Structure formats: structure tokens, C-alpha cells
Length: 126
Image 1 (tube, rainbow, N blue to C red):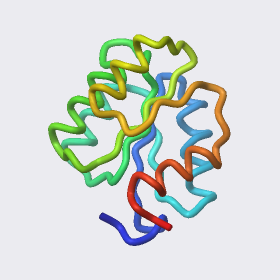
Image 2 (cartoon, rainbow, N blue to C red):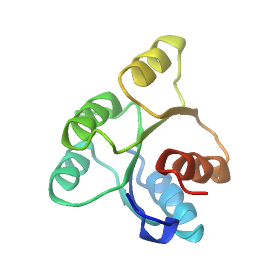
Image 3 (cartoon, rainbow, N blue to C red):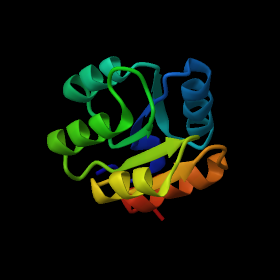
Image 4 (cartoon, rainbow, N blue to C red):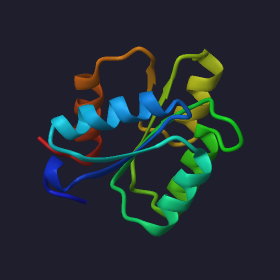
């Protein structure tokens, strides 16, 4: 586990590239190393081949959705927090995400400083 945000590598996944980039840029401005990808398949590959301390993923994506990414991420590293974000939230999907191991479930739009605080909390940063 990294000791500070500067050492934290966060993978940000959203099938809308502009959303993934916006979130990654905002995290980078707050001192995180954030990598944006716009495909669940690419995210799966990167989770298997690179070190990430946290995963921030959209729920609804074609082919590989956020729930599948969460399961794969937790299988590869059970200590890696997963934060799910969605514009199409329901009580059922919130229960699926948090019950399946998501650290938190964010409804879009959300405040980027709130996401940063969630990552800090999940990783135990003060």
C-alpha cells in the first residue's frame, strides 16, 4: 500500500474517453498517478500486467462492465479498493456493487474532491 497520494496508481475506466480523462486529470491534479482507459478489455489487461492501488470504474460499459472489472480486480488483489461510478444507478446495482466488494458507489455527476477523499480513505491516507 502506498504511503501517499503521489505514490498511488489509480486506474480510471469509463467507456466515454472524455469522462475517463477528466477524472484521471482531476486525480492527477490532486497528486495521484491516474491512468485513464475507455475499454473494459484494456482495463482487464492493465490490471493483470501493471500495479494499481485503486480502481475507479464506470458501471455500465459494453462487453466488460464495471461489475466484471470489480470481480477481476478483487480476484487479482483483494486489498485493492474499487470505487464504482454510474449515471444509471438503482438500489439493485448499488447493492450488487457494494455487496460484491466495491468500496463505494458514486452517482454521476459527483464532486471530484469527494472521489479523491474516498480514495484516500480506502487506502488509509490521512
